[in-house]
Amino acid sequence: MVIVMKPGSPEEMIQRIERKMVSLGCEVHRSQGENYCILGLVGDTTGVDRSQIEANEYVDKLLSVQHPFKLVSKHFHPQDTVIEVDGLKIGAGHMVVMAGPCSVESEEQLMTIARAVKEAGANMLRGGAFKPRTSPYSFQGMEEEGLKLLKQAKEETGMPIVTEVMGQDTFDLVEEYADVLQIGARNMQNFSLLKRCGKSNRPILLKRGLSATIEELLMSAEYILANGNPNVILCERGIRTFETYTRNTLDLSAVPMIKELSHLPIIIDPSHATGRWSMVEPLSKAAVAVGADGLMIEVHHQPERAFSDGGQSLKPQKFARLMKSIEELVALRNVACK
Ligand code: PEP
Ligand code: MN
Image 1 (cartoon, rainbow, N blue to C red):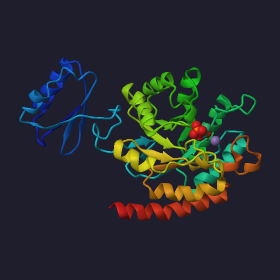
Image 2: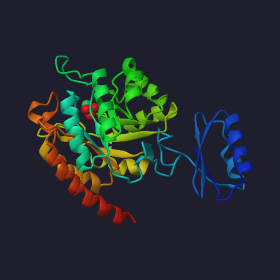
Image 3: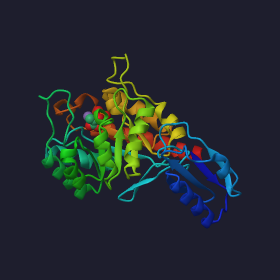
Image 4: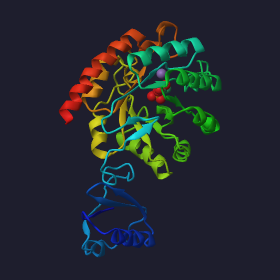
C-alpha cells in the first residue's frame, strides 16, 4: 500500500502517520520528492483501516500496489534511482559503458584491453576473476590474483571495476576489490547470496537469470533492497528461447517494461545475449534507442586465444567504432528527451 501525501503537508503530520503505521506493524519507506511525499508500506497491512487514512486532510490518495515487489516499484519511489560510482552516475538516462574481457587472464592481457577500452571512451572496466563455467574442466578464473590485476588496471586507467562474486565464501574478498559487485545470471535466484548483497555497501549489478521472468528479476532485486542495499543496477543479458543461431535471445522489451515498473537503472549486455561479436554493435545501438542506462560489452585483443567467450568479444578497434556510433545516438536521445 502507498500513501500519497498532499503537497505541502506538515512534517509533523507525516511523522504522525508514519508512527501510526509502524504501531500497526508495517514498515514505512518514505520517498520525498520536491513536490511530493510518498509513504510506502511494507509488511502486513491487514490492520490498516483505509477509510481512517483517507479521512486525513493531508492525505491525497491511497494506492494498493498489485505487484509482489515493493521497494523496487515505481509506486514506492517515483524518481529514477541514480547510483554513483567514483563520481560516475548510473541511472536516469546517464549512459555508462562497462567494457573489458570476459575473464582476467594475465597482466599483459588485462592491461592491454583496459588501456584500449579507456582510450575508446569506456567508463568502467569489467573482467571476471571468479568465473561461473558450465564445465568444471573449463578455466575457472584467476581468483584473487585476478582481483589484484583489476585493481592495478583501475590504478592506471582510473576506471572503476565491476566483477562477479560467485558465492558467500569469497564475498568479503571480492567486495574489497570491486567497485560494483556482479551477480551472474546463474545466481540471480541464489537468495542467501542476494541477502548478503543487501548487507554490502557496494552497488550490485544483478543479471537476469537464463529463464527468469521480469517479475522474478525484480523480486531478486527486492531481496537486495529489503536487506538494506538500495543500489542495484539491473542487467538484461538475453534469455533462453527456442532460437539456436544466437546464444540467447535479447529481450529488448525488458528495458521499457522495467522503466515502467521500477526506478532502478537497467543496462544491456549484448555480448552474452547473442554470443556473436558481429551482433554486438547493432544491438548496442538498439539498447541505446530503447532507453537503456548502459551497456556491458566484452572486449579482447586476441579473441581467438581468449580463455572464455572469445566468439562474442569485440576487438579493440571494433569496440572503438561501436563507441563512436553509440555516442551519436546517445546525443540524439538526450535531445529527444529534453
Ligand atoms: C559475465 O558477465 O561474465 C557472465 C558470466 O555473464 P552471465 O552471468 O550473464 O552469463
Ligand atoms: Mn563472458
